[in-house]
Amino acid sequence: MGGDARYISHGEIQGGLSDDGVTWRRDLESRFVEDLRDPGDETGLLVARGADGTLVGAAIVEWTIGRRTRFATLADLSIEPAQRSSGLGARMVAEIDREARRRGMQWIFLESGKDNCRAHAFFERQAFHEISHVFGKALT
Image (tube, rainbow, N blue to C red):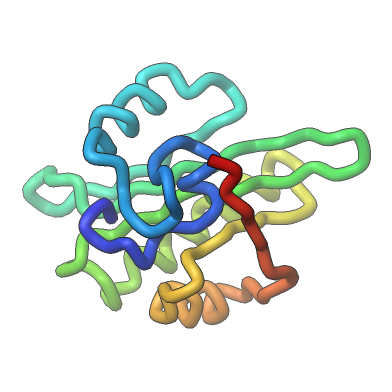
């Protein structure tokens, strides 16, 4: 994921993984490790491993119980390039969907970099639909 700037969206800026919405932080890997060291009860991690045990997919999901709505945010989903179009991403999204329903969530939200067209098509095939555009203004 860190090799492809098309993945960058406002969530990566909000999480301190990109400073400008165009490039990744140089210390991206250490920031991910730090974030996942102790994710807490509000964050779930789903991983997929290949037959040889290597990591081939990962998803980070945040569970939110608000005053009026319960929702999940699919904060990140990354599939090893050689595993894309194998059905792995769809199986991972289906598992996240099952867990969200089990937890009584009403929605699953996600955001995707504006130029990540392949991911947009994938999410639309998984029954997600575009509901807003996000705008940002850097103040620094």
